[in-house]
Image (cartoon, rainbow, N blue to C red; front, top):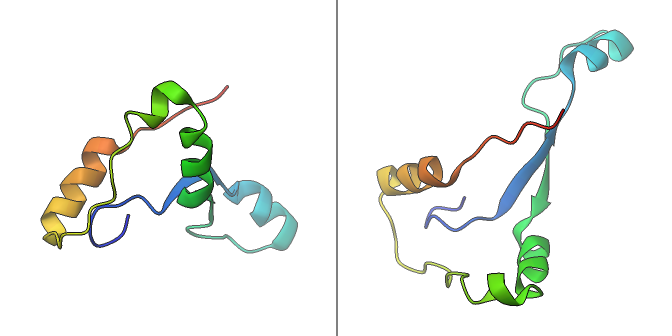
Length: 81
């Protein structure tokens, strides 16, 4: 999220630390892969039922606490087995 609470990317995967350690001998930290929001927006706009529900970008300045609260309310963990 940016400083106004707008989504700028979605984390889509995380590097497997144990595999990286086994292959490189070092333990990586905070290595994630994301999808840019512009690509997601193009996809979502192509779905008629979803397009009508999209919010306009926020242009007003937010307090840091408001951005954090917005991120907490919107975040979800998706597990795939």
